[in-house]
Length: 113
Image 1 (tube, rainbow, N blue to C red):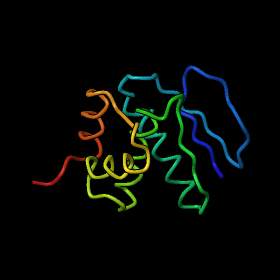
Image 2 (image 1 turned 180 degrees about the horizontal axis):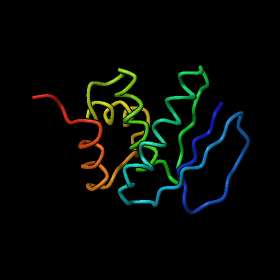
Image 3 (image 1 turned 60 degrees about the vertical axis):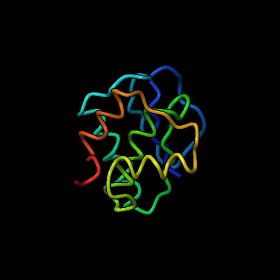
């Protein structure tokens, strides 16, 4: 399993076959380059057939934002809102701040129409 760590506040935990740390601050909107790097990393590992654990300190915002992009790009959801619905079915406590949600909708895409 590959591990994509988005935590800016805590040191590395655990072992993984592949590991990348792309720190993002909790509750903040990531800068576009950092967000794109995290999404690209997860997509590259998935394309190689490696299961990927995307995590931050609490799994509420940063990791959710990255997973939403992966779900949409891979075709598992048509837009950011549908991807968030998929995530919250599995992780009901997943939450993004209003600013994070607006960022993800702007970058990944709102529902068509």
